[in-house]
Length: 246
Image 1 (cartoon, one colour):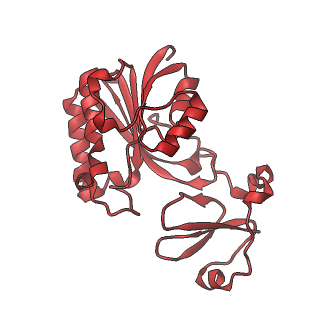
Image 2: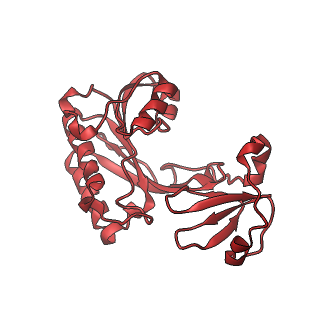
Image 3: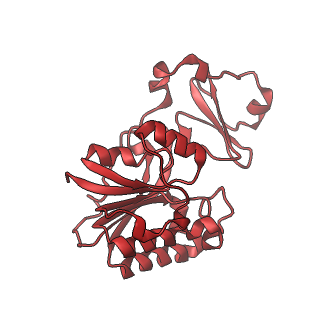
């Protein structure tokens, strides 16, 4: 698919934008409210995203073929309070919906934490699916893990794709993955030593660890204070910590 236009909502520092540009797409609009993320985005792409999407009229957004949106995950995350649509950030999905209704792009890609599927016993996801269907889109979804794509990080996310014109996709072909897991030590030679930390003498951590340590490895402390020794990284989360041991 060459020579298509797309928009980048909740853009962060632009991670989702990169592959779509590599596929031949042109970003015609981006939105990100965090000023620090905006600064990094500007450094990465030479343009500053528009601010708060809730204050932007959908009619003012350029026409586009594909809408991209990694909308805020905190209202649905296992780490957050799981307030869903009761959290103001959870209602940002409806800003995506109003833009889809106004601009009617050919396709979209949405991304969020995997708990979106089960939040409120599945009712939240059902509302999202119903809304997208009412807007005229055929949707598909799948939970993918970064570990299966050659990255040494366990990061599970749900991806929802939608098309105005139905496309026959099997569960086998939909968002197919490579299943190429990669371990942390395969990347250590690429890291600058200043980013590595050895703290193997910390007796507190050893007492909390319930498994046999190995080196090199990543020690991950979860929200409950339990420590796991892993050959890969977990997702970075507020309230958790990761220490690299050698």
